[in-house]
Image (cartoon, rainbow, N blue to C red):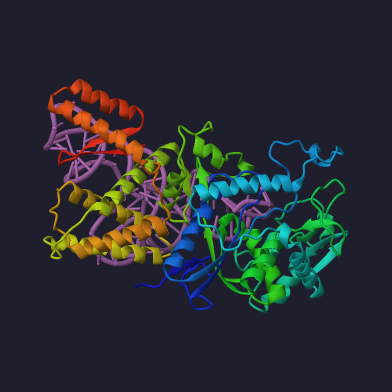
Length: 501
RNA sequence: GGUUCCGUGGCCGAGUGGCUAGGCAGAGGUCUGCAAAACCUUCUACAGCAGUUCGAAUCUGCUCGGGACCUCCA
């Protein structure tokens, strides 16, 4: 079997993946900031790296998957007036930050479960690691790469760049930026005057009196900077150097660049060997993001309650939609595309279920070419996934197999065209890739025995009506069941099956 | 302005030199009492121009168009 290759943003090349510790993989992915509800754009990295997590396990690795929750910082709740935060009301009327954080963490977990994303091995919170962050900042100050200014601490990017360029780790190594070029282009920010250099970034921010999230530190009351939590937590749980760091492309600069700088000072190494970045979901060609005011929240997506949505979309449709594209490409949202994904997924799933019920007794294939073709299509699942997780190509192969599966079921293809061992392999591999690697689930609920009994009864009545040529009755049964979302299908052999919408 | 990516048929998308992915939609057909489903066949492509090459969607240059990052952002 071919070796797994991944596109490493650090080297801008596709590289063979080898883990630091044989048999084990350390995977860190930047999780959500829980100051608001997750939207479709957020779904992409979590589904993308869920596939990475699942596939690495399929390859036999024991994976420690760390995905943080950012619950510290300068937060404002969506739609809540800013003055709430600085009010002097009784404590129960005030916005309690951990209450806000809890609310959105719960919503986030709800969405992750709906997508059938596996739980990460460790889900550390920034607020739970204030001490680790402070220790790390102290180390950076002690080494001379950070300075205190008016209760805040800033990272000295210029000094870092000078010293660490000599060690092969210039600031900008990940994003391909040259420090000198960007100094002029950095815009004005708050408290800019505290920084020695515009490119410097905060490790610790002094909390103004009205700020409600604050912790005691050697530099006074404040809260951690935007990048330090990931460095502190990835080091704690995965070590000074680990295998894969993932996240959205928009995090490449400055977030991941800053992480590298912080960790390099403390641990003398670039923290991760492979940096994987997923591309954005766009809407009308523009990135979905809160600054563009074009986000569709996951709850809106699942219920169809957003002006841009023509209908509700099942979480599995979203998952499938995302898998149809390679993770490094942008993916454009649209109702037509989502509806197409829904239909495609239904077709795939139905054939997948039918496949599990097929049986072939002969181990001699009567159609050698078809048999070979099936074996190749299945073998390529691994080949394509090993090529930087090309889920789109795997799905294309699956759909070619769908046609063959349906052909055998409908007897367009001879029952013994493929051998029983080929069928068994097909059944096994499809199950592994559809359910375990891709994490897909059926759109409809599992059939309930009682409901099934009722429907079978109606099917029998309809059959009898048809024999009498009483099409009024048979069509009534068919049409009214269809109205309830139950679709009857007359099979080639005269039997009738049904699907629930 | 700096860095960088992209432009594939009605829609979403795969694809880095030759073997025209795939899904959805459209058209015709088979099956069916009629449908649906399924299956078979089929129409729309590689932004434009020039170049390299026996041969380019794929390499090079230019033009046009769009995006991302440089600020919280998946």
